[in-house]
Image (cartoon, rainbow, N blue to C red; front, side, top):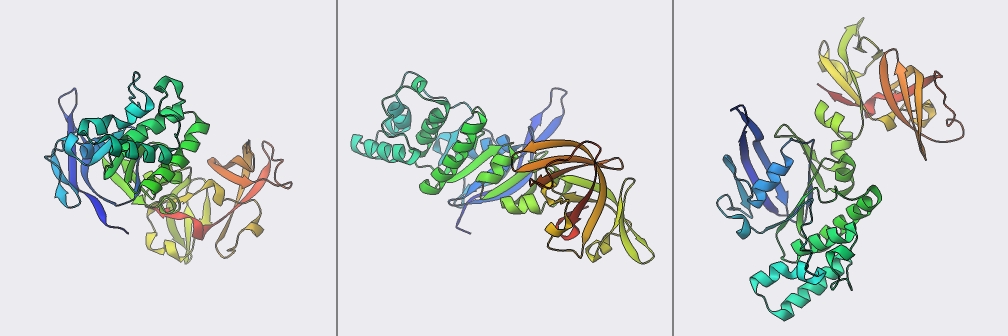
Length: 363
């Protein structure tokens, strides 16, 4: 891991409610961000991610705690003096200014030389792929191009940290996907640390070096996209990130064997469940971890078979989502398409398989 850039220590932010009470938008947050890192704050509306972004930028003041950039506290530093720039949902481009004038606006305030200004402008235009567009007006640009101008305007000032508050939310799906790739490439090329806010799980998984999952003003889990997706540490993260099937029940010991038992389903479990006997647990199974042919599974030792009934089939090109029912338990399964399994029909009886070792145990 590279050198530490930001340290957020015991950050707490309170807001008064209309009824006269208080709500903790940030509840004792501790977080570190490193140089040249793409960090995403991910969570549902009201989880505190935008509030945390605003406390870093200086637009909101903490009620307690501290924020350090390269070891120096910025808690009393006004927003305009912090080595931070922000790109908002609304790009806020000046409609009467050309692309060039929009981008160099901050440099003109700093009164740097014309030569340096043009050198920086050319470099950033090349970085974001807008060479030759410098004389266009914002209304002559597409939504994606306007987003890149807003990004260039932030980058040209060479901040240590770039904060991005859902900057892709106004774009259509196809353009949003291409801009995700461009944003990540821009971050890699510029070497600036990005802190990106989104509620879109797919966006976070595809772009981030590290994801901070937030809920109710606290950090639920943090880690690489792979860690967050495949190894959730709690029910909220498992349920919020991507899609998962949560089997809720209890581990019981019958005749010397451990079983997972619920009102709808039961099966034997292996030794990793032994310490949870007589406890309520949940087993998280991703839709793609189900198979309809046991030969597709590498591990047959801890193979679990379920007898299911097809409720609905949804076609997604190379995959089919099958919504099944095991007794009254609804399961979502994502199956690779081939000639053998493309013709599921409603009320068909099928066998589902999954590898117990690939599931996550949540307490």
